[in-house]
Amino acid sequence: MKNLTKVPFGLVGFALLSFLAANLHAQNPSERRADSILFEKTFSVKLPTVKTPVFKKDTFYVEQYGAKPDGVTLNTKSINAAIDACSKNGGGVVFLGGGVWLTGPIQLKSNVNLHIKRDAILLFTKDKSQYKLIEGNWEGKPAVVNESPISAFNVENIAITGEGIIDGSGEVWRLVKKGKMTASQWKALIASGGVLSDDKQSWMPSESYKKGDKAGNARNLKPGAVLADYEPMKDFYRPNLLVIANSKRILLEGVTFQNSPAWCLHPLMSEDLVLRNVFVKNPWYAQNGDGIDIESCKNVLIENSTFDVGDDAICIKSGRDEAGRKRGMPTQDVIVRNNVVYHAHGGFVIGSEMSGGAKNLYVYNNSFIGTDIGLRFKTTRGRGGIVEKVYIANSYMKDIPGDAILFDMYYEAKDPVLLAGEQRPEPKAEFKPVSEATPQFKDFYIKNVVCKGADKGLFVRGIPEMNVQNIYLENLTLDAKTGIEIIEGSNINIKNIHLVTSNTNPLIFIENSKKVTIDGFKSAKKDNMLLSVSGDRSAEISLKNAEIKVSKTNVEFNYGAKSSILKTK
Image 1 (cartoon, rainbow, N blue to C red):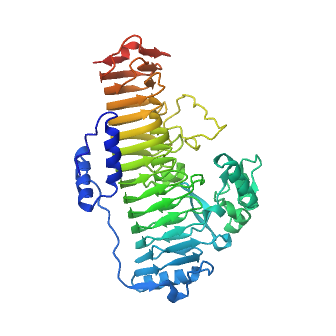
Image 2: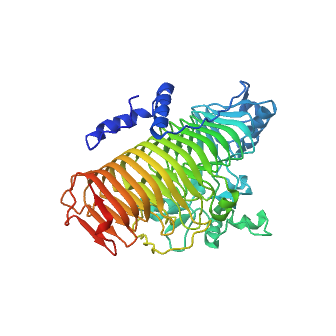
Image 3: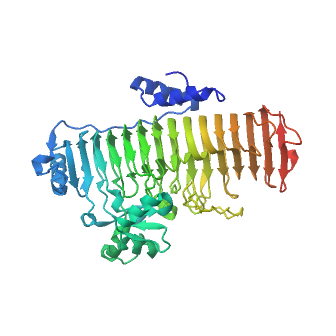
């Protein structure tokens, strides 16, 4: 594989980079190793080693335990019996051949490789009574949830492999927003049953779901309450399709995971996880339909996989607010490479539940096509947690409805691309005391980004008391409606950027930010406003080697910003 550290600069590079992006995901092992060495040299880092499980060759056929692949027989007991027998025998392969295997929840045990043949569908029942309420986790906090279709707790050496399909029957669990449906789809959904929210803007599968939705904090485990107290709202407690917690040496390879009730894949507080050649698929409108949420895990490899989901695709988390800080387990030593993301709220994402922190994240050779936001880093006051030492190279994007690259410390739990009629309020710029609940984004190194089509090229928004800081971006070609917006940033460094914009005035907007350096700037919009600086806290702005010459007519200073803060060369 050719050296990719020097991305072609300008529009002429788009065609070549599209070809490279398409071929990076079909690399052989030697090519992947060459790219890993190049990545390590580029950033002067050492990639972590992720251990993979090894299994005995003994094979346990689920038919021998009474299972039938007829799509009618409920095989819960039979599949779990095969898994138990395999694990007790020292491990091996539990094999699902061709057919439709209808089942309730299954639980993986140590030393078991659940292998699903290409013509097999592991289909989870729509009968919610098969899933018992348990004390689990929801978006980074302890919560009441229904049992996950697939789970594993406190195990070692497990896998799900093959080329078959795992379907979570999420359509019977999820809320659906009217704004995400066509008129005919909405009509058909209502005709299928269920109930509407009081404002008629959301469909819910049952009155039980609606009761939980209206209760407010219904998932919280209340002191003195027992699980039976939550039964009237059972349908509201949507499970994640797969949860693996407190486990080691995990392999997910080749399988399609689809149609999850909530998040699709949720490894939690686990170590040595490999996700390889997997397809993660949810409807684009799936509420909380994330691809994979890696929470408080260590030593993770995600490679050669494809995501087409309803929420964030590849997401780094570490617990929410005080509960996450008390756990104190950052997600760290993660490699994300050679993946393709289609629809998702974000392609590669950190947050917003990152209260335990995240560090040593290595992301390279990924493509985002039609993803709402390409690189999405989000948090908000109250989270706390430090996200640092993030290294990203060779990100290729096309048709991004939102921002190509986003850092936002005012996350408000709304879709990044608003539905018709929705509005996004502007936050007030007010200082608040720094505490353990103050989040931090710092020390990000991003190289070689090409985006063909976005609403905005780069958006950075920190908070007054804790700016987004120490961000290094190099070799960017961004074709977007608007260019660069930096608010409450500190030590933001951009080197070699080509902006291709359609309606930008100004090309670069900076507000209450300091130590912002742009070295090597290119744009065809030479008659537009080049730079607008706002705010009396803005300082030490440097614009060097710009193709457009700075003049009194293309630079402006507003709301207390002084012209003396700008240095040009």
